[in-house]
Image (cartoon, rainbow, N blue to C red; front, side, top):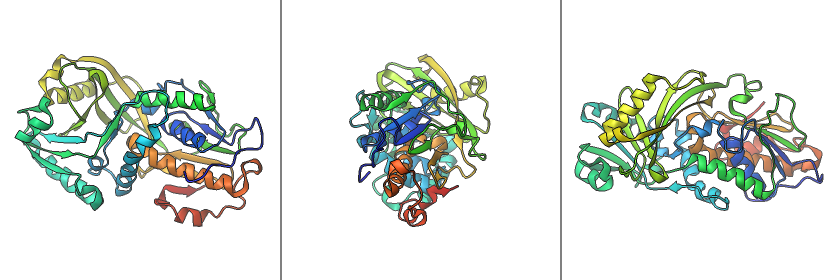
Length: 382
């Protein structure tokens, strides 16, 4: 953010109350408090973030790989997010694993048609500047050098050398610790009912599916992820295995931990993972490298990602004192820096237009401000 927010004149009333302490809520609160705002955060779950959709994720930062299945605006925001993550992590009081070692895309030869489709869609949806220097065709021999754990397993693939990943759970914990250290007013295990919002200059709703009372077209999309411990394999970067029925990714984290995912089901069922999903994910991992057969299953995780009908994120303002940030769908860690950064910019503009102590919205030129932003369609006025 280019300038600090105007602080509230009250000693007890926060400038901003953030509802929901998942990924978006924590990251938004972190940016606001670093900009000088007095922030209160309300989260129905714990400081670990274990009830958030962001807890069940691989946190891959792969805009080019996602271009094969996502809208161009997602790719653009994801590319911006990838560049912003290091500065957002900087200053957090706890370690967060962040790696920018690329993404490797591979396929078994019977599935080569999937690779052709993947390449076509990726190049159609990605901007030219992202493609330049961002895609390298690799042979089987080159694959053995790039990723020794896959030596002899695949005849060809693509290396997307500029992509990255981070550890989602380390990040959620570090954000909680950073907010506490910075003096945020933190309310864990506190659920806010629709309309019963806390007193603050501005309220920003980041509750995900908890905001369905206000965003009636919001829905949950079930995702399932396996976490395994597999010493000795040594993958160096996330790997995507293309397959017509169950394409998967495997993201190596620190200490020989791997995250395998992810199924995507049009369901809000939060019951445990099905046997079928577990078999598909684990069988695909085994086909990538049979050594995964000796891995230990640490967790089988399920959560639902908040999605809007167009599968695009949204920052909404009610014209008074309530903003809503939602709909990041399956792209949470990829999009969060750009989306929450834009939400912070809107909060800054609103609070500077009249001052936090007098309410917002009376002297703010919404249409002019919206048109000045890099992604005007991200914003809606209720």
